[in-house]
Structure formats: structure tokens, C-alpha cells
Image (cartoon, rainbow, N blue to C red):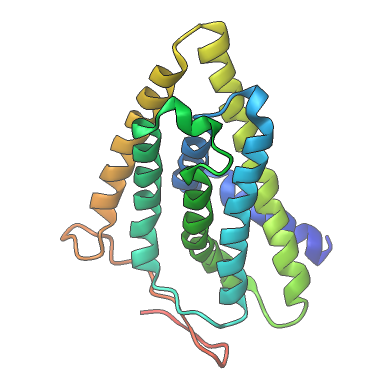
Length: 214
């Protein structure tokens, strides 16, 4: 197996696993407001998210930023919760705007999710072939994300266009369910919560390439 294929599969497996249910719900929350006819908007949305997580993943791999795994694990459900709140308070007029706020949510929150992706990538990565491995890993993540988008759009099609549930009711109801789940996760993952699992590592990426776990 080539290195490119290995890292591509690693990117897919990083998303399509029960351990990544938080990321799956985040992408689902981003897509809930869209239907099949909105596929161009979904492409822009996913691209914004891709830019965000690729940037921080790349900076982590190049040893330019410091990642505290406990806080990243906490902020992931916060990004989900804020996305759901944005869905719930959305007005139908916002869907007609060229650049609705959800695009900027996707870009900014992608930065946070990229730091979460960095943990697995950096645990295997060396200096040789870094750019190729980074590209393959990102492409694997994107392939998995597109599958999630496809499932989310199919679900919306089933509920809104076949079952005929009002579009805003579906958006707000599904977002409310995901919001509750994300808030429970955020509560449990808060780094200073007395029941927080101390097994999470703090990964420090120094300029000389050293990783430190505490």
C-alpha cells in the first residue's frame, strides 16, 4: 500500500467511525437547512469548512501551533451547539442571502475541527513526505464528509419532500435534538469537570518538532 493510499484511508476512517460521531453531527447540522436543489450552496459550505480545518491541520503538522487536546475536545461540541442555535433562530430570508452566516460558522469552526484532526495525523507523521501525506489525509476526510452530506440531504429529501414535514419544522426540530446532545457532551468534556476523563492528552507541538503529552 502506498503512503498516499494509507493516509487517504486514514482520513476516511478518522470520520466514519463511532468515535467521530461528534464530527458527523456537526456536518449534519451544517447541512440540515439545505435540500437537493441547494447542492451548490452545500458545496460552498463544505469548501469553507475544508479551508478552515486544512489550515489548522497544516499548521499543526508544520509545528507552528500548540494544541491542548482537552480544550479542543470541549470546543468541538460547542461548535455543534452554536451551529444548531443558528439553525433554530434562522429566518427563511437568510437562505436567499449570497453569504449567510452559516458559511462563516463553517470556516471558523473548521479551524477548531482541524486541531482535533491533527492529533491522529501527528501521532503517525514524520518529516518525510509531509505535504503528500497531509494532502491524502485531507482528501480522505473530504471523501468521508461528502458521504455524510449525501446522507443528510437524502434524509432531508425524505422528511421534507416525501413525508411533507414543513421545512422549518424539520430544521428546528432536528437541530434541537442535536443541540441537546452537544450540550451534554460539552458538559461532560469541560476540562475542569470533576468527572472529566483525565486520560485525554495535552499535545504540545513545539517549533523543534517535539510532541509532549501530560
